Length: 372
Length: 131
Image 1 (cartoon, rainbow over the protein chains, first blue to last red):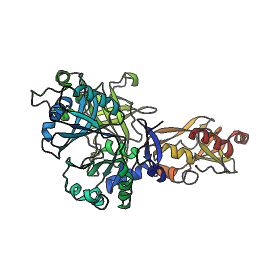
Image 2 (cartoon, chains in turn purple, red; image 1 turned 135 degrees about the vertical axis):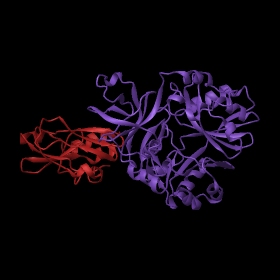
Image 3 (cartoon, rainbow over the protein chains, first blue to last red; image 1 turned 45 degrees about the vertical axis):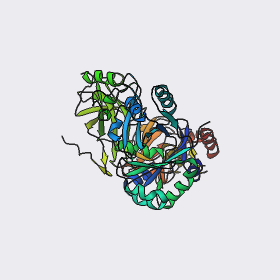
Image 4 (tube, each protein chain N blue to C red; image 1 turned 90 degrees about the horizontal axis):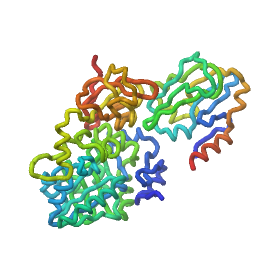
């Protein structure tokens, strides 16, 4: 039986096309994915992300515990109300999950983990927690609504009641808790916005209030193209247990200093950092028609001899970007590759070029026109 | 439930075929097919004059989600393609049985059209896929 979120009936009533996502019945779109994508870039949209799981870490050792378990350093968010994006690694330096950690109170942090990894994450955290004076506790009956887009801040004012004023005052990557609620100025679209954790029984009223305030419901389809344009990794596609943050474009999230902080995966990453023949994650743009897809082979331009099965590069995430109006992708390729590549599409190899990402910032394409 | 007009013929690969009555047919994809694919972003059409056999992959419709081949429903020759789709692939989503038509073809053997599915038979295929 697939699990459903507290907002399932709302999705059905809105005519959503529902799909199974990590064991949850989730809306992929409510009609048109491209229309929904644009609503978030130009106005405001909301996502039911209640399949993601908030996990609270309490106790005198909460900070020490997270400094050991997370690759980024929660010492950067000692001030209550700050948030941090980080990977959680295994001892080989592979990525168990990526998550945002919110510092919500003295000796209290909340992490929000991915649906597909939630069970594994919980087991992992519990297995490590006994050495510390901490309690690891999932917020069981929770719902999460993400409100994203340039008009998000204006539109939540009417919908969030008593929480609206504090939410409006938040700076980027800040958050606060109020009773069972927590609100962070964070997101997964590249736009301004909020991620709102609340008790399940308040989800429907909040969703309807947001809808009445003119916030458009957005499915997971648009969520994927929005995050790809914003250059944000998707766990399980762009990185997993067998890849390190260093080869996933996430080296910037690993806090190697201070040098005396021991965190899980550190030793493996320090070795990996020295390797000359490693890989890296790059952005790709296709200037021709066609769409690059997950799993497609990538070879350096002009390397006609290499077949798709032997190519050293692979597309990890690819799609059509509705804001950039062409196909964009993230690809894992050898460290020394730059410039022009070729991607194996349906019938033949097509030229693409390596570019820096994000592809979109503040609603606008950053892709420079092709020059020859 | 998706719309399945009674006056059209169908294939099990979700193309619809309209008999234009002058030896040519118009071909598109069904409402159900466009809904499954999601928003189209590219449509790749054959050249007019191309000779095709039933079952040949002659066109590609590509959505945000996936690419899908379009097959020639019968033997014949491509007579005309819907060039508007080059700029406006979304027409296939908005009006799959009308402005979103893909191509017209001259049919080699009019009898071949009898082997296509009628609306009721196609409806059963859609029902089965929706289970």
